[in-house]
Length: 356
Image (cartoon, rainbow, N blue to C red; front, top):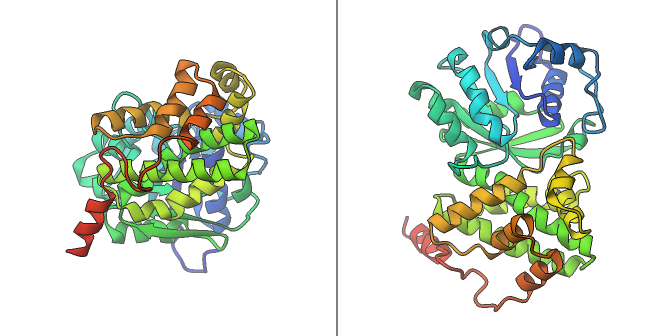
């Protein structure tokens, strides 16, 4: 909680997703003034009355959190705006907010996905839409953060990344609580890709669990997937060590193991023979891994990069491949060196690091 005499920081949450509402509650309980923006007054009234609280968000709003349908009111004199929106809605939402930003306001992406069509990360989408003078304030938040555990105040850790360590530290001070530990990083590319691409692995892990193939198969599948997304990360300029951290391995563990994970759920249901259309239609939230698989596959092809796990998951999602056949193909593929793959550059990166 804030001490007497301290200025109260004002945080704005754009996105009435379960993650957006959870972040709002966590920060309000810390003692910050939090504004949650609703797109319509009708939605704002429902939120104030608790009508939107479901199993996805079983919490209640503390007094420090208020809800408004006025974006200008929400963003007036704010220290930070957090965009906790689905990745495909990021561009639309930052366009609505961009005219209310100022040079000192942090702009934090809490979305984990890639934009369809452009295949861009969320920080790239935001940077394209806001004034150049504000781009250094862009941060990305990612880690093993299942909202239904965090809303219960269970201990958790995450990473906030910005190109400037000073900006990342500002966000860290703002977002950290006694039970929500925020680490900093300056590898924006790696942190962002880890959070987005791990959802592809979670889809496959769900398939493995749905098929009853056991922990050995699941461990092999997850590990091969993690190496593969690290290879894409390196090709795009990330530090491969980032994928061993909270935004990489940490998020992979949580998302691939927890029944709270939407992407794991989709994978399990696919393994049971249900179609993607009927699975997604039955869900309250969005499984970001579905669209991310498309974007990641496109990026891999642009870079001539071999990503067999991603390719196989794509075949299940969009080409009617059978999950049991795909998992068997991945785990029985011809093996070579563990870090060797088409245009994978781990060895070059290690050699370059030695000469730094």
